[in-house]
Image (cartoon, rainbow, N blue to C red; front, side, top):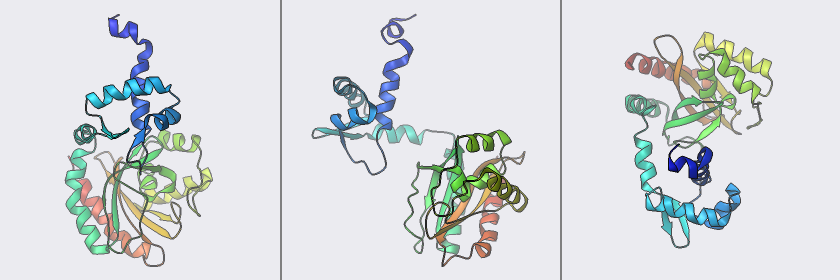
Length: 250
């Protein structure tokens, strides 16, 4: 065992550094040591020491007596290869879909029981949505999540159901049986819907981006006001975009 491993059994320091970085939430500009200690449960003395390491390596930046996420994190994020090629390939198609519908277009993948948004092209006529690039949302409460789950191994759906189906919007599917039946229909039609399941007054239409074996790599969706968007009318455009993107990818 090397000296670093003896001094840090079980990777405690790595876990603490990770906890500090993950303590930042959407909307957080800067956080002080006291707030970080409160959020992570770490001793304030440890927080001060670990923040010094993170600042030294550019992962955090000092702003007065507080810290904010550093540009180095952004650089590392850009190197993430899982979705990078997909985003580059999808962007022109997402832009065309936005122009055709004037609503917000999403590209998302499944990560555990949540969807992660890889790209968002916001439309001028769309509602202000809580989604953001890199943001997460429960898969069962989104059209993109259902589009992916319907074309994924059954074990992934079981993991989502086992984790619970919390209510997110006024009409979120919280009954496993109802979710299963809806996913069967999504699999048959190639289109998933979110009718105020992720938020009040919002409707979403999604379609999966499939690989050669028919499994979902991602999903494309549009989101708009429920009183303005006729979901069935825009569904063919979403489906066409997803199919075209599926054929484009290696």
